[in-house]
Amino acid sequence: PICMMSDEGRDFSRAGCAPTSATHLFAIELSDSKMLSLDAAGNEKAASAVKNIRKTNPRAIVTGSLEGLMVRVETIEIQ
Image (cartoon, rainbow, N blue to C red; front, side, top):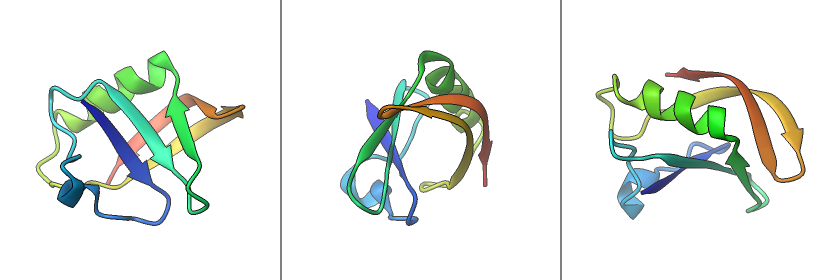
């Protein structure tokens, strides 16, 4: 499954996109509806981070650099 994180805190769990241990691709939806994909390392970091959460709609702080519409992820902090 693909799961999105939003910069506006939208509740994607209602749309059937609550991250699970089976989620392996993640994206960030910006307020202007642009979608940013995560690089391979970012997807691995996001997948690892969501394995230990109990919330159905976690928020994340992602740091990294933007390359076109892809984020080269340095860190992901789940809140």
